[in-house]
Image 1 (cartoon, rainbow, N blue to C red):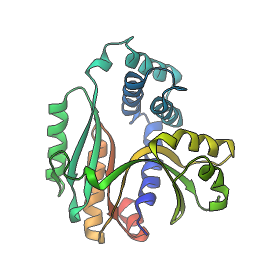
Image 2 (tube, rainbow, N blue to C red; image 1 turned 60 degrees about the horizontal axis):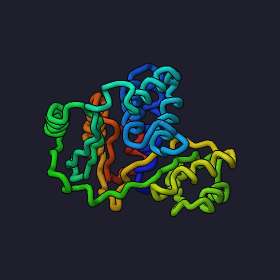
Image 3 (tube, one colour; image 1 turned 60 degrees about the vertical axis):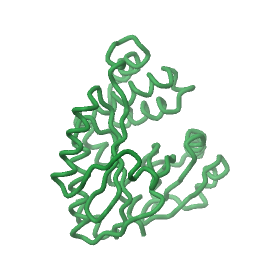
Length: 249
């Protein structure tokens, strides 16, 4: 078992709790702004914006905040002009490959911060292209396997999902980026509740870790995610579920 989906589920639940405390509102707002800037302010015509808005609503972000973030992205505010998305690549404990997605108005500052976090937590920041080839951009939808079976997810397959996998206590639906929105909507129409639904960098191979390296890796990931400019952290680790529960708890 990879543990990757389990970690995704743990991250999602933690992020929602933190967001409801207001800790992640700035990150969610930036994601909405950048999506609106890059694809326009209509969520029906902009899948990235629709997804960013949905995640903001899940975190109980006020409607006014979401509308202001969209306005910034469409040019009604000046802040969006300075924001850009940056992908940092590096290695963590045990040789795990890590992709860090950031949204920043100061690439130099963010790059310096990310490098510092890597170096202080058993990792190293690499050059562009050093680990990105180990990941594919996919739509990833997680569903509680205790509530649903693979048969319940046939609407996702019919809508274009490329794979449905059971990973521990979650079912993972994987899609091509172009099919993500229609697959998610098919599941909604079938009244299937989703733990999370997002675009993510999915590893093509996994690196097994023992408990010692797993604990170090989780500490590094947590430090990266605590940075205000970091939007998401992706890693190709393989950790047994019982170890993952202990080190992530």
